Length: 155
Image: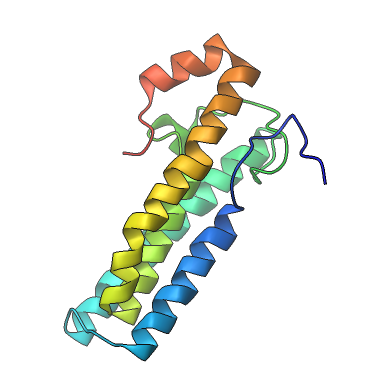
């Protein structure tokens, strides 16, 4: 199947990457549990990450939809969105995804999900974010370059 040239050439669909890492971390923890924190503290941290990340993700999706562009990275970007959470980070949806991952990792409260965070973040960064940035630079040119200089990639 041919790739649409008006989409970034991402390696993997982000929810599959994040969900796959969550499942793998949970499976490894189930096979070889190594607890890190007292259960109550882990749950409080997990819930905190889940709540704030869900709010960030919802807010980012809402701004994209309001601008009339696609949320999915495998569909063409129709508008450059620079308001809402996009004023503070160029990747609020991926930041929210990593936050949800951390929330789940704290609920699992095992070493494995935290160890998987490093390769997960690397794949997200090099396999998705940098490819999207190349695509957006090609599509929006100087307008996107100016946005890059004003807003950080992550935090």
